[in-house]
Each structure stands twice: as C-alpha cells, then as structure tokens.
Picture 1 (cartoon, rainbow, N blue to C red):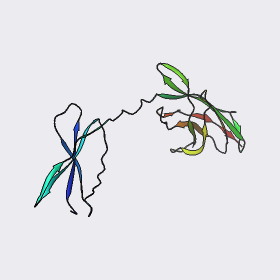
Picture 2: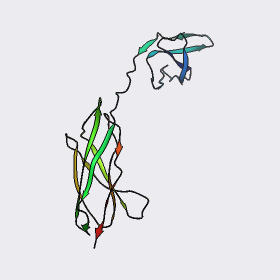
Picture 3: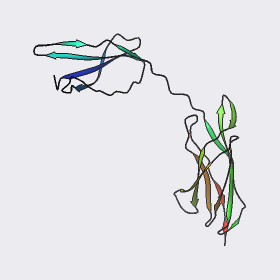
Picture 4: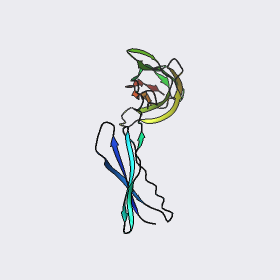
Length: 176
C-alpha cells in the first residue's frame, strides 16, 4: 500500500522508553526511507500502526553503537617573528614560528595547515595573505612582500587531531 505512515523510534542504552524520532510514507511497493542522526548508542525500530483491513506491526529492534569523537589536543603558535625590521617597501619579509600541540602535558611540534594574515597600521581588519604548512617538528617559515607597515600573524584553524590557535601579532615597520 502506498502512502502509509511508518514511524521510527529510538531507545537509549539503559532506558526502558521508546522515543519517536522521525517518520516516512511508503512507496507504491511498500518501501520507506527515513534518515536520523544517532547521537548515542541504543536500539532503533520501525512501527506501522496499520490501516482499515491491515494489521499494524513493529520491526525487531536493531542495536547501533555510537563511538565518541576522538579527543583533540590544545595547540599554540609560539616564537612568531617577522623580519627583518624595519624592511624596505616591496621587499620580502620572512615570517617564522612554531606550531605545537599539547601531548598530555608536554608540548610537541605539530604538522598542520597554517594561514598568514596581515593587518595594516590603522586598520581594524585582518587580510588573508597565504597558506603554508608547518613541518613535522612544527616549524613554520614563509615569505611575503611587505608594502605597508602593520601586524603579521599566523592562524591555525585546527584539524582532526587538534584545536585551532592564533598568535597575537608581530609588528613590522616598512620604510620607503
């Protein structure tokens, strides 16, 4: 029968109560498709109340195990330095630093994708300059042309293993 309502229920581990999650209508062939996000381990089942002349039914429960997301490490950007200072307008500025993550109380180098930003003197907003990668030991090194005096900083957005980090900034004066 087409268009019959099928409801999906969930019972969390350790609970004795079924909770309504979502529902769907059957296709002309009696099939249905419902999507739900499993946030904790427990039992899932489908229920059909029936219709005139058709008896309702409940599926056998199906156990789903939900694994917690992996814990992430804290990170920090340290020893960030833009040099030489002052720098001549239009020449390359070298920027270096160190990206580290907290490995159970000990700070170790972290390899990751890091963005470089610049904020001109007197401006309120940071401008994206480029993206670079830190080495396995966490060392960062990149170059950028300096056109105006201002502040430079690295931003690590985080990854599957570590949270993000932002370095305050390093001011560099540009001379004409």
